[in-house]
Image (cartoon, rainbow, N blue to C red; front, side, top):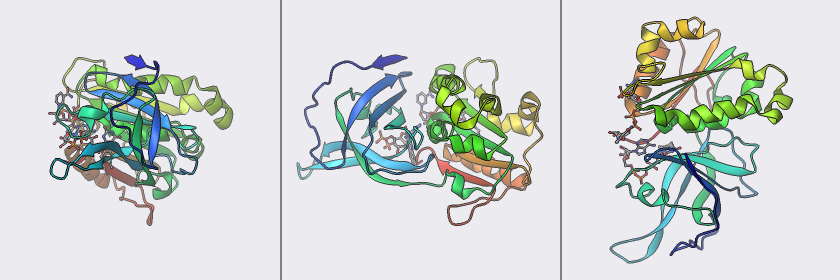
Length: 280
Ligand SMILES: Cc1cc2nc3c(=O)[nH]c(=O)nc-3n(C[C@H](O)[C@H](O)[C@H](O)COP(=O)(O)OP(=O)(O)OC[C@H]3O[C@@H](n4cnc5c(N)ncnc54)[C@H](O)[C@@H]3O)c2cc1C
Ligand SMILES: NC(=O)c1ccc[n+]([C@@H]2O[C@H](COP(=O)([O-])OP(=O)(O)OC[C@H]3O[C@@H](n4cnc5c(N)ncnc54)[C@H](OP(=O)(O)O)[C@@H]3O)[C@@H](O)[C@H]2O)c1
């Protein structure tokens, strides 16, 4: 990883909008993934797991006018944090991320302070064990929820699975889990032994790693449950949140329904909730 925390660099076009927020830190994890932190607007309240619209100014080719170019982003930091963190893909020809990947500390991004989303504790009924299922950048909302004391107060056991193509794509999540296990503030808030409640199950599909395979296949074969030492999900005990690509979301949704879990929403809490990690 490469961390960029050097002196502020002036961008050619700094948005002069009320929603502009200053970048404080940028970390590049792979040539396709980076994370960054920005100042948090004093008035911004959100629930861990929600997403906001963020972006940069861009020039309209037809009119020549500057306008905001915005995309949905999960807030990766927990609701108690002074700053906001985001975990991002770099799409080389992507309208936003082809430029966003070059931000540096001191630059400004646009952040619309209207958080929304379904990956929130409020959308689930009480349970004993919570599963967070992520692929790729779908880890982002769980980076928030995993640092929220409520997650450990509400559940006896917290299991995060993360499936990526390559080992390097797991690094942001791996380091985050390591940091959480050593976090004194979380330990103080939640009490001794909170770190033991947390189970991390990373898998890769296209590069050799200790656990290979899609999480869906590993659950179908029973291997994931055997590895984790837990029974398959049951509506009486288990709750789940899902965030990944569309095919993954659809496949795991069907599996969760097969275990007897029902999809919840803010207005109607049930046993699992789903959100897309990106549109496609
Ligand atoms: C609810 C929601 C939350 C999101 N949260 C995040 C987040 O936390 N982090 C993040 O990086 N993106 C997130 N996205 C995707 C994000 O909104 C943009 O699509 C992404 O930043 C790329 O923007 P772009 O303009 O460069 O390319 P776009 O034109 O938006 O996308 C171009 C293509 O790149 C691919 N792509 C886009 N996003 C991703 C991704 N995250 N992973 C893999 N491939 C992708 C798709 O094939 C897409 O068609 C989220 C999307 C939604 C709907
Ligand atoms: N990751 C890269 O190195 C890379 C490089 C260049 C371009 N891209 C492009 O970027 C886009 C996104 O790539 P990404 O790797 O971030 O995300 P992705 O294609 O959504 O894959 C992320 C992980 O999810 C797994 N997965 C996909 N569908 C699944 C399903 N139905 N059930 C269970 N698991 C499933 C993938 O396994 P499988 O490997 O088995 O599909 C992979 O391990 C794609 O269009 C890709 O072509 C990716």
